[in-house]
Length: 168
Image (cartoon, rainbow, N blue to C red; front, side, top):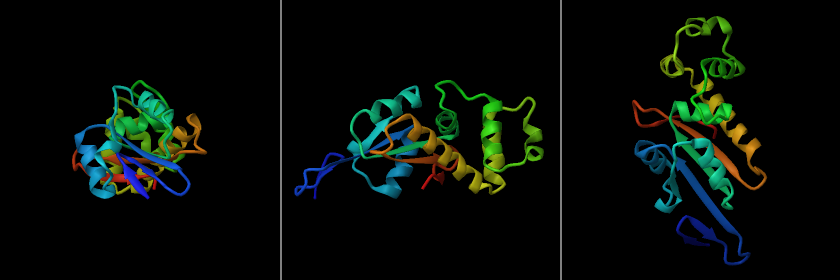
């Protein structure tokens, strides 16, 4: 097996294997690189719109796609929007993960979507965070030709600079 700038080529079958990581910022890139040790050429910084970044690289003939991003960008992928997700969209997504409406009542009025991550994180609701990453993964797979691409979504905390949940 030969490794050429983010691409590995199997000499026997000439199959091309490309792995791309879309990262939000330098903190997320570093946290991913610590765990996965991929070549620098595999990493592509997210443009302003993470949905467009995913669609762009999905057309480039890759085999694996990693997304490493913060809360808001993972939510954008999970609800598939280029704009900032609306509170009711995020609440609906969280309900689908098994959180009861009663638990979400404090957030239904005058909350920001960013109020939900600390609540989930500090309440040790990592199962919910993993389900949100999986929802983002599923949404990406439904929008690209997922028969050819393995998708992984990783949520990085701006506070700790570490991956706190993943679709793996």
